Length: 114
Image (cartoon, rainbow, N blue to C red; front, side, top):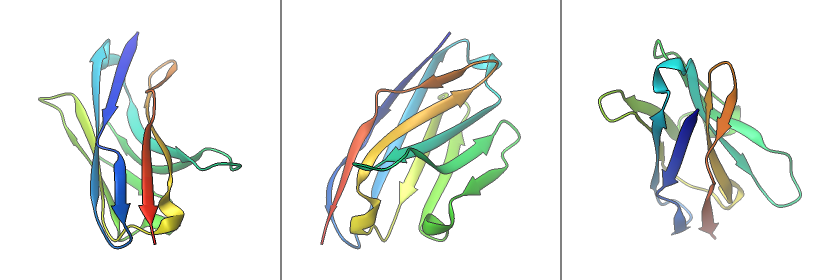
């Protein structure tokens, strides 16, 4: 079992920045990759950014150049630095960890006002 606890969401004006954190605990050695997903009202959940255990990263096109995913292995924590935020980034952001199973955090709300 893997437990994920997210933090760092909030309300920010367009052009501002936020940093999300996801602390993992439990059977962390089984984790192959972690990522951030988001779900806006009426839309499907989408992958925003992912990072593998080897450090390879991927991003959805809409956030490339603005968001950065990183990990601190000593703290078992993954971060999502979000810069130049836009109103269309407003969503609930979920942390995900993949091992043999897929684990989800509780979600954190990010609201970007215009």
